[in-house]
Image (cartoon, rainbow, N blue to C red; front, top):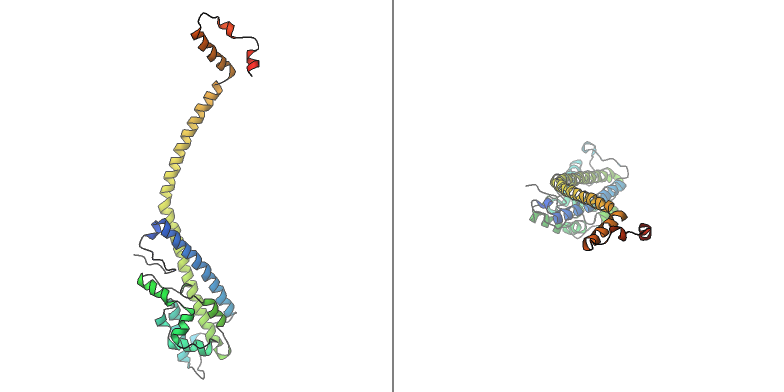
Length: 260
């Protein structure tokens, strides 16, 4: 059974793409999510502002962090994003680094910081219905505030830029997954609906043929309804009722022009 990325508080059962209502809801979820993620990626780019990420081998010891600690935080940060921003992946090391070196205001604790920017209730729902977790806006609910607060400054510039590049990379990867789902759904629609399209086309063709036959019949009848045939029909009708009368008596000079 294929598993889908959680995008809203909707549970999509197996085979939902064949249900018009559920499919429409899913496509709406996809449309909104793709639009928001496109905005997110542009916003991340603006914060990166052309800075390049620091390769792990270039990381150096600082007064408050060794190079190995920096590598560990960067790896944990990437894992946190890749895991769909799950709280259990938001380590104390990430929390302290964001507070101390990325310009964020300290919170009462790690859970308080996390709940400011990410929605754990959504993650709980996704796990409950067995959907796939990805770094989507429905989890990263306060992403605009987060990116506005995120700073790359001083000796932490390279590490901050690396964190932002990691975020951008994971967002792009998720965006491609969602776009592929859209394309797959489109192809599924073609395969499922084209036979129905052909049946409807056949029905309309048969109906059109019937109308064409009717048009020919009516056109022929219309052509036969000229003034001469009208007079002939009326005269024959009266001749049948009054056989003793001379047919010539029914026709007067100028009758046709008078009727017209």
